[in-house]
Image (tube, rainbow, N blue to C red; front, side, top):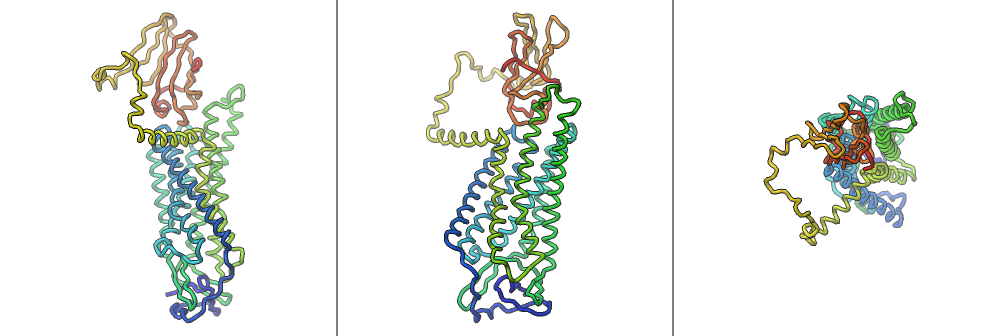
Length: 479
């Protein structure tokens, strides 16, 4: 079997390029080469502390992000679904990678066995590939939504297919690590060395003790360029076009006369700004690690500079920390994620309180006398029936809600024309609701200068934005 003696045990066999084979059992009669340096205890403790901090932030933050999107119907938009997919890949980093490298800092050897030797690198490649491809899909979705707002939205089916393709490609990219990664063990005369490394079919050693592995070079070139740098190029182009479009709309002919952006445009800018910052953080954190991997594949040498272990640690920690900081970015740029984090903690406290006192909720339930309907008062047919018409009030005006469940029509016996009304739901105009599901419509108030008001309770903004109100804006009196 061909092995890489140069990278593993500092044993070099100089000479003409050739395939090197050796019986490592013979090394039991050879004294192990001395290690060049010993890591101080304080440095090991500091590195482990950093890893523990990143792990806790990653697991807690990304778990809450996933729960917010899964449990809250209003948050299940296309962009948020892709963000949940990104959070899943970030959780993989904490579950399979961080703690392994934290434990490896304690000892000079590999203490986790052959299984985690394969799985650790597999999930590392899987996570970074899935993350960068998910970010690329998000950039494409935002590009279409901003530049082609009426026909560029992803349907749930297209979103599901995109996520499936992302994971299939990511698994295919990471699968070779399961074949070439394995644990090595050498019994020296004075100690045993155990390490985790790649075992490619052939290593060629030249007169300068440099090694080459053609298969390894091809793999890392494809993995780094095609699966990392090329998608990032697509994302930079997409967000540049989005930024130009959003800036250009300031001077568009349909811009408001007062120069202020509509709630619709403000929502677009906030979401795009958040995603652009996530992309920038991803590039800053993962590029050093990708450059080091590509360099080690193309320029393998038996001698490494003394500073290289520190550089490798910083590059790897930055890559891992990216997964931990993403939930903070979501909460920092998006009010609904901030509210979701608060609600998640409130839910935990309420559930804990209910477990302590199961009758607490019942004791706080108040029913006004005469307000409770008989159990059989509403049949199944009533659920599908149109809402009732409203009789004229003391001002002689008639408010009617026909047809659609949430359709609104306002008419007056004085005039055959509808009232020139506008609508406002929770501070968002109707145009904002058409594109954004970040908010909840609690009530709609329709008035004609008199005190007649119709309050419409809406359970889900996604229902409103798809099939309720026409494009004209409606402005209510003070809600």
